[in-house]
Image (cartoon, rainbow, N blue to C red; front, side, top):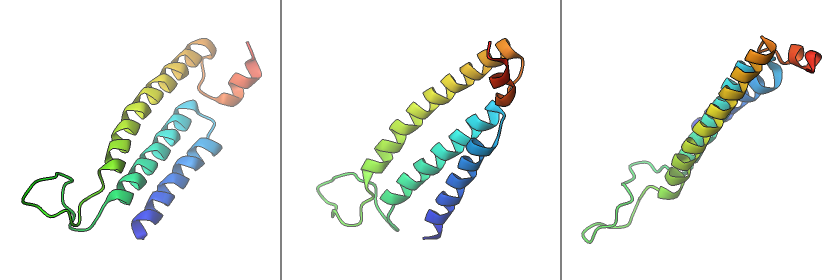
Length: 112
């Protein structure tokens, strides 16, 4: 139960970074923290204490196996998250080249 609370704490830290910070780079880092906390939560959902790898063999019992579906979803999520983070960083670089700042309040004021 405490691991789920730690995932929630990590999610709240990332949400704070997204909602309260004005620097685009810090907002991107907050989104990455949110993504990692959700991935960790999915892995924890499929975890079992003293669980075995989900490999089906003739001589093994199917008792106490780890659920492979959250693991596959997290692998897919990591790849998609990497692409989204690269896109956000490239947009932040283009904004810095155009406006000369990462502060979103100054970018809103320029409107150009």
